Length: 293
Image (cartoon, rainbow, N blue to C red; front, side, top):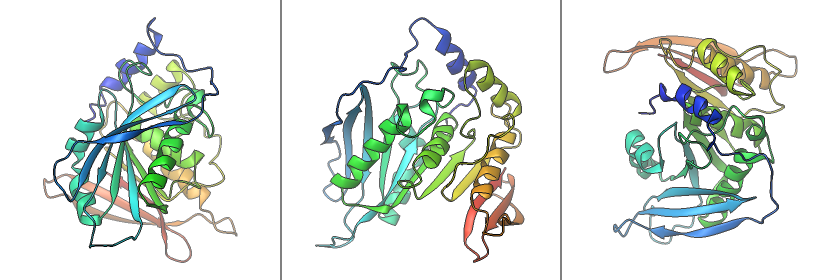
């Protein structure tokens, strides 16, 4: 789906003359373009729109499920889906089938789309320092987009979730750590932890062998679920362990004890084995979950 094999080439493309540079912020105000409706079904909508902030424009698709009942004014949750390299919003929606699940759950789904101007292979720029922190770069642009959707579509701002695949998974982890006041929980599939790289060489190294020594978890990491294949030859499974460790560290109890892990093994319907480990706090609430396939 994401073709994680393309990430290495995507990173190499950053050295090309036409690789985009977003090092200088501009002070342009947020500009939100009203989405255009593309779906004909009267009870659900599939919208196109765009949002601009500090000279950076992000196009998106938004799935709005049918109303649960006539006159229902209850606010609904929002799931933000960050695609991987070479993908776009439409094919990520088709590949994940998230809209079908969202229809059942009554959730909106937002699919931001990276541009080739920002990255030649349409990867989120997770490996550049200017895109790894609150108030800067792509995390800020994504946060502003999310807030505009929350305001315009009566979203429950306590139930905003972000998930991503590969490069999108890396950016999902960055977004969750940078905006824990906005993001209620994070899902990372075959991604890398925030701060795993600061340039092209360190990005390639992290992909091959896992991240280097951690600089410590941020003050607050939202509840996090991680999926990773232990035979992944492009993004090493040690990256998943690093994401899990940072989340556990963030959720220490007052005594300093880490959430306890309970592991179980199983086999998916297609036959693939997995180990699922759930780390819960002293009150029994799951704070981190890790599926190693």
